[in-house]
Length: 307
Length: 262
Image (cartoon, each protein chain N blue to C red):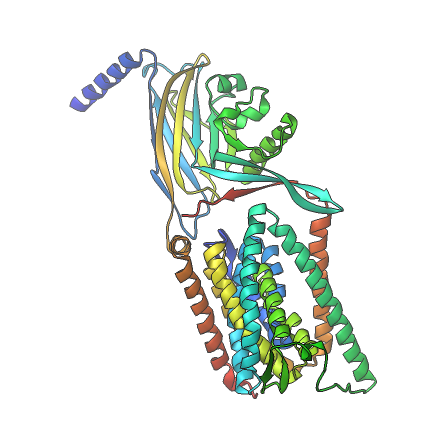
């Protein structure tokens, strides 16, 4: 049972699409990750053109982050003010990101740049997850509990334009969150990711936000970043595939909810270590594609008349 | 009875006009629709020689069928190794390249013949007499003729691997000595637009008669509607895509709320 994707311009099996959406959604629900960093490379592997994969992933993340934000908002774990300040940066970041993206499409380097970015990203995520999960497993074996500081004081507290963030119990400059938002906006537009795995540690370590509020707040701001990225891609690169997005969203929303259920029942560290190995495997595959001499060193692209 | 006489007169008139031969041609489709389930199509092209209805086909006469698809602009990029990484480097832009090209003949037609009569795009790679004038090419900073040839070869090769360029012989069936038919494979990767079928009757290595007609390849269905909507109203299209995502995201959270004990 195949379906023709009108923007990607190819037929693809519906079951395959639903499985990809479901598995990525399950993993994102389970680990509290956005899942975009897995979605985009998988879509590229199954033959979706890079630009369509990136733009459509952004659209899919809108749905999954809304779903997640609602859950955290009900528990009062979203700092809307902090989310808003982050968004100021993200707004300009994603505009710059989409501009960079469309320039790279014109120059014919988009595939290479996306591959290199993903290689760097997946390698670092894989290694961090592997280290972190093995530490948790080791600590569990030694029956140790890790103590954490509530609050970090650093340079973020010394800059001008200080603002009060009551929900996060912070009084810091608005500049660091705007810069963080800006970087996330660029990454989101060029890679089709929400950027939770960068945003969360940045909010904890650079801004000193309480860990409990971080996930909900990052998801909240990701809704708007990916929504903006979706609109920018739809109007400038014409690469958002609504049919592809529809099937991925349906499956990933269901998968994410099941992932949350599973996370409550299962012990995550072993699965997290496994996921880390899968992520590293994907990174190696991307690296090989860049490093091994291709069979056909010429490639063709048709210049579409935009009417 | 009247009809038969009319047909005989018509054939006779045709015989007189063309002095040696005439051609008629038909096809089973004037328009090919590509929808979600389109997996390619065999287009039937048929016709008759009218060299002399009472006689069998002259062994020296041949049929050449050429199908030319709508033109498109393509960029060919060459990957080169930079510090171990294979990156796109030089590129050449070919303008007005046919998106589909098919050449079929009863016998093997020589390249000299094709060059002489300015037929064919595919044959040019086999000869030294490359007629670049047919294409409008932006070579960028490439000056070397040998390097240009590699790009030209790559264009043909990639198009052949996508099954949109083909050159065959011996696939035209001759029935009864005077009728012919051929199935032309139209794969599902073909571009949409107007296609031109050119039919040549060749006698003694000379084009004795030619005939052309057009057919359309059109995209239809919901997929086409989405495609053109996304191009014509990109902002509304983007907003609708977002709305779908928001609705599913919110309802997903609602539906599963009761299963979660958060």
